[in-house]
Image (tube, rainbow, N blue to C red; front, side, top):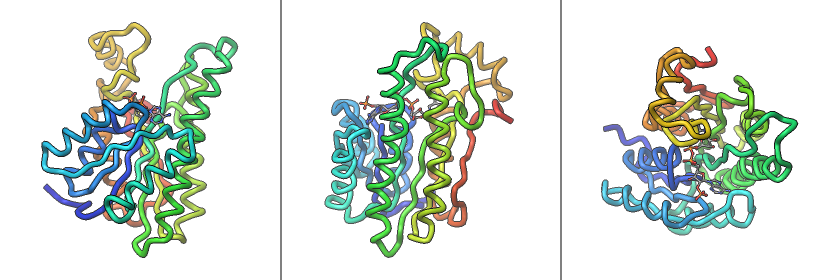
Length: 254
Ligand SMILES: NC(=O)c1ccc[n+]([C@@H]2O[C@H](COP(=O)([O-])OP(=O)(O)OC[C@H]3O[C@@H](n4cnc5c(N)ncnc54)[C@H](OP(=O)(O)O)[C@@H]3O)[C@@H](O)[C@H]2O)c1
């Protein structure tokens, strides 16, 4: 296996499950020392154990990305333990506030914006502030969604608004900070094999059936497929890729 991240320190938010865990494991498998962040300690410890069992190094830090002090502490933990912050993946997010716009609960709307938008902004800000002090700069990948700037679906407009903001934040911040040596890009997954792509009450078998008609590829993307796109953008293979928003959706928005 290639080792594109040997000796590099990485931070992955929302790394206690799903895409974040897969990205953290893939980074560690390619030599990165990984800080895994999220709100619940138990799932983070499980991610650390999986990485250590495979021979990698990781550190769990509990953090709510909607709190500036928490994400600043996560960045500081990477620097304290591993000496730098070279890669960051802002993956933490929620799919809240489902339903037609007129029926969306105000608290759910605010949670979406707080976590999905402000959370990415606060993490990105803390990461860039550190990376721009380093001779080697750094690379950041934000996780947006194919629901957002790429497409909208009925009943998920609040989520689409929040993820469109992540796509735009990515492009704007990429322009702002490439001269600081910090490369910023996004991955916009389509339906991926986690609980988030299940409709309320839907089984995995029912989702598989729906995918056959909704997605040209005919299936959900795997966690490894999404992680591979993230690692590409975070790696030196993408050294001249700046402000890209890579859609990984089996052709759903082609
Ligand atoms: N699955 C899909 O089909 C799909 C498609 C497009 C985009 N995405 C995006 O991909 C990302 C990962 O989703 P997933 O499918 O892997 O879902 P997931 O398994 O629910 O992962 C989300 C993670 O984010 C963490 N998180 C949520 N709020 C947080 C907060 N305020 N602070 C810190 N961590 C927080 C959660 O852990 P805690 O609850 O412990 O904090 C959880 O580990 C999300 O941004 C999602 O919007 C997913």
